[in-house]
Image (cartoon, rainbow, N blue to C red; front, side, top):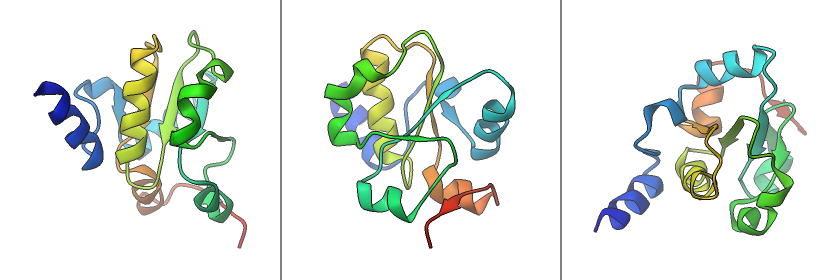
Length: 124
């Protein structure tokens, strides 16, 4: 039953139960600017990524993450995002399960990032 609630929390965008892995957009932005290199990963669809993204992010759609985990370094911090935080919460659980102890995601996703007036690259 616990797994059911974990999945439900992810679908609702509530993120993981580890508060250190559930970052507010401004906290995520500060981490990215801190000089400690992060692997920033956009787990949204290809169409969403083409419309706009956080500068410097790598695009790995959620449905491809399982097979593309080897592209990421488990010894470096990983910061995940999607549109609302739901998919990145699921991706975070996948990475934590694969041994990525320094993984986190942006609470509220790109929507919250934009609402916080943080910079976004746009193709429009």
